[in-house]
Image 1: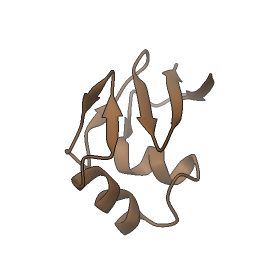
Image 2: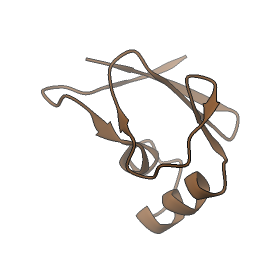
Image 3: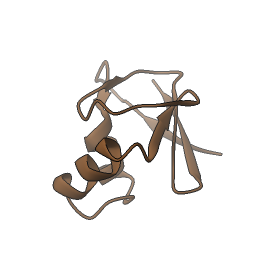
Length: 70
């Protein structure tokens, strides 16, 4: 399973994570995927576009999963 490192930041917004991972081509597309209920965080559908994703959480979209680390 892939991981995403927060580095020096305390969190990453969900829409930004989709863009950074290349799962969406733009912020607007990422927000549409999230609003459409296509993204899960820790197994639950997440529709908040700017949901703060912190270390230890697992994000899944389109058959791909990523675990966020510090």
